[in-house]
Image (cartoon, rainbow, N blue to C red):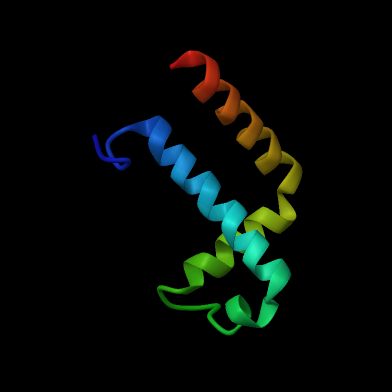
Length: 72
């Protein structure tokens, strides 16, 4: 089943995107800062969410990891 149609898989993909964009921005900020608008602006926005809401994103990652390990 595709990640688009499975809600749990969609959440995992979104969390991984947020975490990856925040990590890439911490290593090379100019890579994401030059694309603040347009279709590539999604990655910049995900990086901002990962930076500003990092405790909440971390809690969501932990909850998703536990649910994957023990619920399935």
